[in-house]
Amino acid sequence: MLVLFAILIAIGSLVTSNYLITDLEEEERTRMEVWAEAMRSLNAADENTDMNLVLKVINGNHTIPVIIVDKEGKALSSRNIGKSFSADEDSIGYLTSLAKEFRGDGRAIRIDMPEEIAPGDYITICYDESLMLKRLAIYPYIQLGVVVLFVLIAIFAIFSAMKAEQNKVWVGLSKETAHQLGTPISSLIAWHEVLKENYPDDDLLPEMEKDIKRLERIADRFSKIGSIPEPKPEDVLEVIDRVVTYMRKRTSNKVTITTHYPNEPVIVSLISSLFEWVAENLCKNAVDAMDGAGSIDITVDEDDRWVYVDVKDTGKGIAKGNFDSVFKPGFTTKSRGWGLGLSLAKRIVEDYHKGKIYVVDSVVGVGTTFRIELPKAPAKA
Image 1 (tube, rainbow, N blue to C red):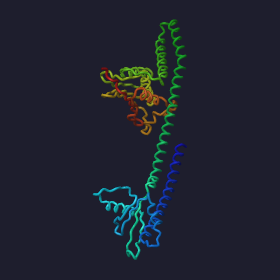
Image 2 (cartoon, one colour; image 1 turned 90 degrees about the vertical axis):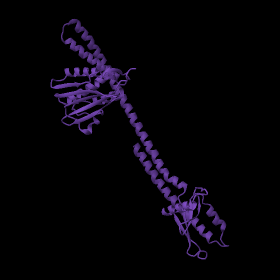
Image 3 (spheres, helix red, strand yellow; image 1 turned 60 degrees about the vertical axis):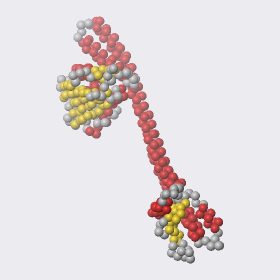
Image 4 (tube, rainbow, N blue to C red; image 1 turned 45 degrees about the vertical axis):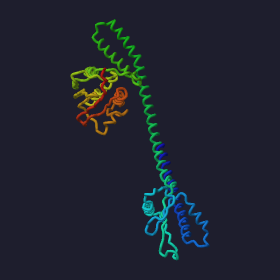
């Protein structure tokens, strides 16, 4: 509605200004016809002519540029041209050329000289639009530009407000989730300690402890969304290894996860718990896309400024038109799911790590490659 209202204002302004300019052009044409009649009267003046009125009309033109030319088109005199000439300038040539332009635009009035004075001779009054009319012709476009600027600012403000509101929802949901997880996790920790005292040799207790620690890490991740934790220099290879170890234990034997690393540690400023979440999300999506059978290749490479983490799967693939859409909240190709995983991953990579995440390549029925780009940690002095 705001954009439509602005467009209507702009159209109304242009239409109104066009009518106004047309009316003023007609009025100036009429004024020049009166001025031409005064010049005709001046050329045909005798002792009975009222020269005061004629001179008053001629001298009353202070706004419309006028050039008088003879029948050969050579300038004879001018008025309101707004240009002064030095002694070495060709003023006649300039005025003649300018008069030709005026005549080409259809702004010329012919005055025949009196037969008794110069039979067959005539002069032509060539005139231009007044400065006020020229400014008025430009004004609607300036106004249109202001309206367009206003619309762009309004749209930017609306989208910024919407994004800020979305961020508040994300942060509120994340912190509430962390808060809600806190109580049952504390209870599980207590029960685990009771079980350790009563059944110290039970083989299931170490696995239960791992799952409890896993829940604690998940709650910690949610609690960090919305806050501004300080990234720390970490070896990205170690972080990815933790994710790979976790995924291998929780996926079927039909899924093969292979890593390709440089020989040396790759140091990046990371919030490790959040980056683990991103890597896990990509791996889980890959497993879902492969229907539990296939291979995942994780490749880490680097140059002078960036570290590149590629996660390639042999799943269903993504249509090229959906490369950007997969990162939008709510987008999912699964029958179950909220479509928030990749959206959160994008926020974590871009907002917290100042990097990029995108689809490098995907072929439907063949597989997909996601890439994460992370700026390298500055070298210590």
